[in-house]
Length: 388
Image 1 (cartoon, rainbow, N blue to C red):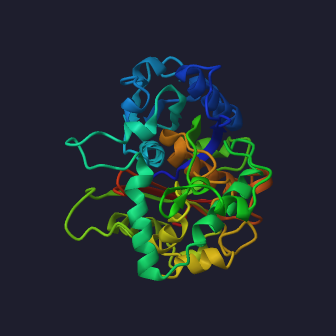
Image 2: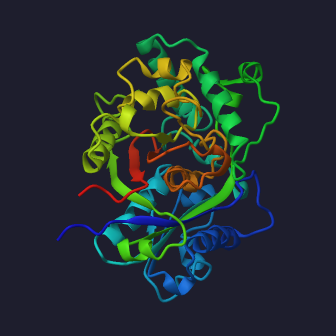
């Protein structure tokens, strides 16, 4: 039996900010879920199951929060599933929900991911002491900076590329009302003058610490036909993982990322991603990862990713817009960041991305990664039902 086509008919986000002191975790997630239901024209009774995801519990110090969030998410008496794949969890959570619909296990699923970083400190949560793990030099940036330097050595990329990405994404964020960072006075010079945190990563080239949630309603073909707004159709989705450390691991361009993208393109019958995909919502927590992932995802040849960035190809007016929403550099509720990428890709093909809408976007890629560049999740969505 062929898979059931899966449609995204509702999307809801909170305003991502440094601290939401006005709501509890339950209030935060419900805010996103209610907005997704309103977008889909549905009520809680229309939801058959809930799939929820977040980053490690020690980031907030609340163990297994999904148990007490069931009531806030209308999941009492309904199946509820928790997903965890580090920073890629938002994407993985959406894919688990999509697979439940595709397999006809459930017809309509609410999927949601969240983080309330203000109630803990993720940077120091990621800096566990020796001997429990290797020193990370205070947070994820200390782990990834050597990989950025390796990319620069490997490709000859000039040290200005990271600031170009940050400047672009922060300007894009000004068009996104949900983005955390709205710096109306942003300039390229301001980015380049910001303090160096982990050489070569500057302060303005890093993601913020955000509170926020994102929700989506996924349904089958019949549910999509009843939706009040155009749906986004899932053309392909995949997850891949690899160990954090192993002999021969390529931190600059992980094999799991390549394999994940290749599987998605195969499902969606994409042979030339650069030409066939209209927009990309890419997980870029540190600006240098834009050119690195352009190569890893097959949009550029090895050593060519930074040239696309430098030439303006990834700008809102370029032929491959990357992170029109402002991306992770402009909003980073860690557990939700991957789902936001998936949701923003869906908004693009639904024509509902507001001021950061890419004209004529018919196919868009959502991308997430997590851990030590070990977990990958991606989906490709389109404005029309999937081929075949």
